[in-house]
Image 1 (cartoon, one colour):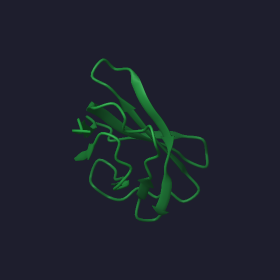
Image 2 (cartoon, rainbow, N blue to C red):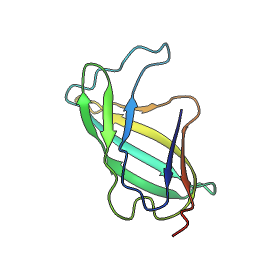
Image 3 (cartoon, rainbow, N blue to C red):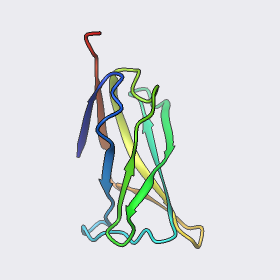
Image 4 (cartoon, one colour):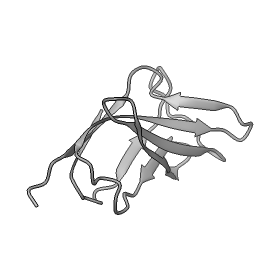
Length: 106
């Protein structure tokens, strides 16, 4: 999965359907989800709390704020879920989601 924005954009929001290894939705009831993004050098660029929009369906969203997309580049993204029993699961568990922020003309 890839998500593409222009530099400085705060729309559209990033929406993610979090699933297990066989594609079944993860149950996010009572959980928290954080979005992590790292640049090509592995430096953490984002560590943001997401909004869960469909807990049973495993769907969450991040609404960009000013400054989030200021630096053009390609980022590796993963989602870290903390369940009510304090266990942690990272999605995807193989590879990453790609976030591309393209340079804007102005």
